[in-house]
Length: 198
Ligand SMILES: N[C@@H](CCC(=O)N[C@@H](CS)C(=O)NCC(=O)O)C(=O)O
Image (cartoon, rainbow, N blue to C red; front, side, top):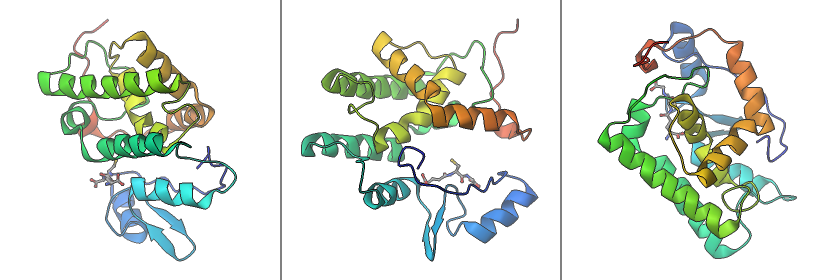
């Protein structure tokens, strides 16, 4: 929504707390985040929210121009939405931390390899700087992967690493990281321990 230059108000829901449970009951019909309220419309799914925002903006495109690129960007976004269970389980998103000495198990490495293949293919075909040239929904869908690759210090080929760095340095992401530093909530079950200590 920042990239679409749409103003919005954010309500922070502290997950897995009593306060968060009450807010989820109030705002989230599917009992999950994210959820978007726009007037009477309630949208309870991240990809549907992206599609809605992309439909709403008329002065900029949040999907690629060419129809086959658009199809690939949609497939890539749908794959993010429906896949990578091993990675999600082993590498919970945690943009306040760098986890030291993380070694991916085989199923996690397979997910990482698939994502790197997606990044490399898209970036080679578009020539960057975003996956499909200009910023699209696919970049938004993979932003939580960029933060995970950073948190767990995953080694990447140069092209993918440059893309991850671009995502991490994107102004809305920087604002988000700054906001996260001001939070003190910790979700214990999502805290992956360091495996080496310094
Ligand atoms: N399909 C949903 C998945 C949403 C989802 O699983 N959200 C997680 C956080 S990323 C959540 O709300 N977890 C809270 C819970 O499990 O109680 C989407 O992408 O919108």
